[in-house]
Amino acid sequence: MKIYVDFDDCLCETAKAFSGIAERMFGKIVPYEKIQFFNLQDSFKLTDEEYEKLMIEGHRPEVLLSYEETPGASKVINEWIDQKHEVFIITGRPFTSFEPSRRWLDEHGFERAKLFCLNKYGRDSFIKNSDFNLELEDYYRMKFDFAVEDSPLAFRFFDHLPELKVMVYDRPWNKDCEFPNENFKRCTDWEKIREAVNDPI
Image (tube, rainbow, N blue to C red):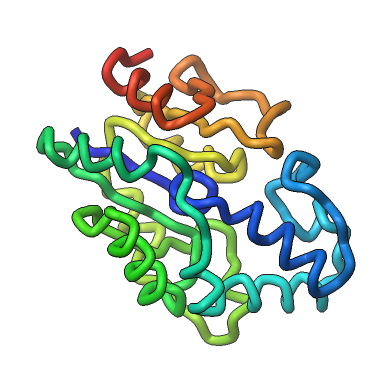
């Protein structure tokens, strides 16, 4: 099987880290549980300038390396790889973040998973002249059997795969979203994700 796994808030606790950064930089106190929108500019009520500064800070190598692993993620992914499944970590982080992201993965037990930076959200604007090592036209040639994703904004990237089974990692910003079809299943943790792969929808 080929399995797509999103990086932020599936493998690591990015939003929790950004909540602390927003409070430290701008005095915006929005606990993780109160993050309503995947778009952090809206969740933290930031100006365009503040949002750009937030994203640049959150993507500095030393900050990226400080993010905590989502409990159980490396255990399940290594089980999949041991079972000869192919795991593709496809992140919306710009390619300027590739090296520290790869290092974070290697340090947290994901060294056998492949990493690709895909321009999912047009975020190349916050780090000037950045690029990505996977273009959309190449991504759309890829095939997956399962996907792990937390962002409703990313669901459209699965439209070309009508048989794909999608495990939606339960997060505050996707609580009220409508799933595109019955192939999407909400999972509260990595144990539930493992069960969903072992017993497909």
